Image (cartoon, rainbow, N blue to C red; front, side, top):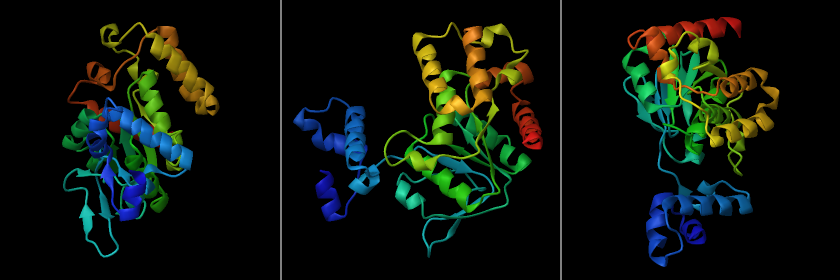
Length: 277
């Protein structure tokens, strides 16, 4: 199928591919098709987009940012409303940007992204907000990489859960995926803004989740043995989770500062982090 797509100069979404091969009774789910595509891309040592496969977009961006997707295209104002990041990582790499922002904030959860948009966080601190609604896809990472290369004055920060999966998401944003063709999309200089152990101090015990699962502890060991070997501050956070035998979501901070004060509290934390960086 990849040969057919490349020969015809066409593209197909990974979900579309699944429905086209579903009758062959080879793959049982879209996830198996996606894995097969990544394995082929890895063997050929090229990004899957060059084989004609595209991903459905998950990413969104909001804030003081103008984006031009094509050379002769119009500038799109991301401060008017949240905009979807296109799923083609190759096309995203050719975008042009203009911004007066100081920061770019990558956010694990769409719900937190929407709250910060609605509460005016971007306007309050001068930040571009980006989310991939969970584990970041290649197109969102490519967007962030292109954005920060074009506007190197932007300071990147992450808002993720205080748990092993949140740290894993932070690492994918910072170091890129281990899959062939996407490791170059790391977000160099990314700092962990929230939720961290220091911010969770004073949060009621009832909002913590525990004990840690076997998967949690295996992920902690894997992360510490990988790219985090040079990140003592993040390792300390993982050690704190293991010692406490618990984890917490970003929303745990609501119980400390209040839902209505969450955005202002996060803004104060950002300004404190920036003054120390």
